[in-house]
Every structure is written in structure tokens, then in C-alpha cells.
Amino acid sequence: MDASLSVVLPACDEEANIQTAVARCMGVLPGLVRDFEVIVVDDGSTDGTAEVVQRLVDEHHPRVRLLRHPRNLGYGAAIANGFGEARSDLIFVTDSDNQFDVGELEWFLPLIADCDVVVGFRVYRYDTVLRSIASWCYNRLVNVLFRVHVRDIDCAFKLFRREVIRKVDVESDDFFIDTEIVARARKWNFRIIEKGVRHYPRVAGETTVRASDVPRTLRTVARMWQHIYFPRRGQIEAMQTHRTALANEIVESPPRARATGAA
Image (tube, rainbow, N blue to C red):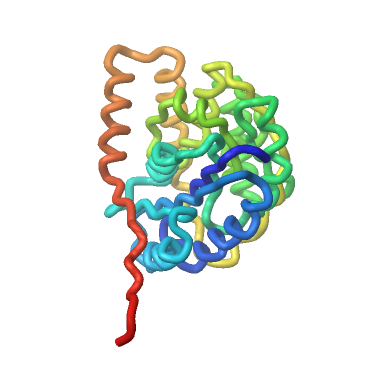
């Protein structure tokens, strides 16, 4: 495809997964797009995630870039800052836990020619029964409130045209960013379609989503509905100020100079 692509990989304590995630991108993307970059956003990891990625930056820069949050700012903040630093025509986001096959972008890229957003949905979920039921209920609620008409809004496999990311400002710092960005894209009448993707079990690390997140998520849904459809005076300015503050937390890690000459 004659387009450039930025891949955004949010990562928090994914030392055991991140090298494989980046390697898969590096192996697949040259055959799919004219040019690409892989942006890993390390969201204040306490393990060796950043060190693993830094070695990849040293080897593959500027194809691989590392953005670091000195402290944990949240999943949504990691994605938003990755979007803000992306340089390409198309922007793709997925998680760093290797539960999706980035090679399935092969089927997403032709679809973006006739739409603005391609949202993946998991054709089979490797999640607990309770989490799957909660997700089904959440998707029904979101479809009613935001009229997005997608079956798996939290699926971490989404492809955007650059103009969508430039137009749609987001304020969520947590996992609600998946809902918010699609809801705001729908509000701006961007064309959204779905495509099924395979979902694989996590083989390393652990999810940070907990059942205790449900009440907070419901409060966030109500607040976001009001912000999108009936924004109050000052909310837009506050959102932009907040996003600027988060962007100022970014530290981009350049490639380290390689030693030359004989000892």
C-alpha cells in the first residue's frame, strides 16, 4: 500500500512481551506499507520494558522510537501521547501483550481506502466468562448512548486516518479512551467500519483491568456523554490544557551512540 503507517504500542510492565511485539511489527510492516514507524510508549514501567525497547531503538532507529513517561499516567495518556507524536498518514494502535496478530493489518489497510476508522472486533475472546459478559453489557450501553454501532469497542486493534486523530481531541487517561475516541469520531461523522480479528491468550505478564473498575467506568461513561453532547463552558479549554500537560511529560529516548575504534 502506498501509504505511511505509525504503530502505537502502549506498554506498562511488558518486559516479557515488548520485544516480540516490536519484532512482529518489524517483520510484517515492510510488506504492507511504503513507510512505517513503531512508537512504544512506556507508561512509567517499573520493570525492564524501557531498557528492552532502548536496545531496539539503538538497532532500528528511526523505525522504532521510545517515548517514556517518568511516572504512570494511564493507558489513555499513553495512547494519546503516542498519537500526538505519530508522523504518518495512517495510525494504528494495539496493545503490547501479543494477544493480536499485527499481520492481520493486511486485511484492514484496504478498508481504510473507503472509510476513516477501522475498528477490530474479537471473533473469539480469550477472557474469563465474567469479563466477557461485562464487556457485552458495556458494548450495548455504549452503542445506545453514543450511537457508535460497533460490537467490541474496547478491542485494541484500531486503524485511523491521520485527520481523525488531528480532529478528535480526547481527555481520557485510562481504558475509556477506546470508547471516547470512537464516540467522538462518530460525533464528527467520520466513517467507521468493523473487521474481525483473532484474539490469542496472554502468555506473559498480566492485565491491569479489574472488576473494581466497573463503577468508575460507569461514572466515566456518564461524564463523557455530557462532555461530548452537552459541553459546558470551559470544558474544551480545560481538556486542551490537560492534554498539553500530559504531552509535556514525554521523554523521547534517542539511540545511544555506538562505540567505534579499537580498544
